[in-house]
Amino acid sequence: MLDSNIQDKPKIHQQIEQKSKEIGFTMPSDVYIGTLLKTLMTSKPKGRFLELGTGIGLSLSWMVDGMDAESKLISLDNDPKQIEIVSGYFKGDERVEVICEDGSKWIKNYSGDKFDLIFADAWPGKYSEIEEILSFVKVGGFYVIDDMTAQPNWPEGHEDNVERLVKYLENRADFTLTKLNWSTGLIIAVRNS
Image 1: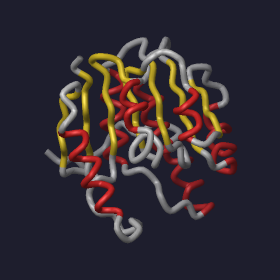
Image 2 (image 1 turned 90 degrees about the horizontal axis):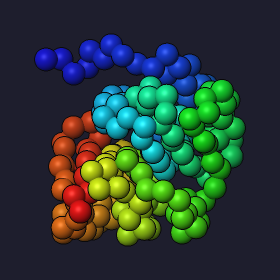
Image 3 (image 1 turned 180 degrees about the vertical axis):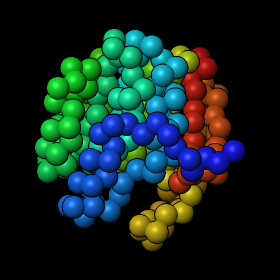
C-alpha cells in the first residue's frame, strides 16, 4: 500500500494550495490529515462539525468533501485576511459557516448543539478551553488533533504543552483515544459516555 498515492483530493484543493503559496501561508494542513478528516466526516451522515483554526482552508476543503447534503460545518479562525480568502471559496455552500472570531471567546460563549466531529487545529480547543470543547462532542463523536509530533515551527518549550495535553486526554475515562505516529502526529478520540 502506498499512502502517498492520493486520488481523491477535493476539486478546490489545488486552488487553495496555490493561494497558500501566493500569500506565503506557512502553516498549511498536511494532506494526510485531510484524507482522514474526509473519511471520518463521511461516517457521520447529517452530521454537525466544527473546525477550530481554519487557516487557509485546506483541511476545510477535505471536510466539506466528506459531508453529505444535510450536514453542517462551522469553521473558525481569528485572522480576518485568511477568513476573507476562505469565505470566497465556500460562500456558495450553505452547509458551511466560516466565522472570524477569537476561538477562546467563541468557545466560552457557545451554547448550541453538540458536534459529531471537532477538528482542533488551533490553540483554543486544543491547549486552552479543553474541558469546554470536549463537552461539545456527542457520544460517538470524534475529537481530532494533529501536530502532536515535533514540528519545525514549534516555539521553544511547546513539547511540554503537547505532553500535558496527551496525559490529560489519556486520563479521560469518557473518551477512547488512539495516538498515531503518522502524518504530523494525530490523536483521534471518541466520546464513549
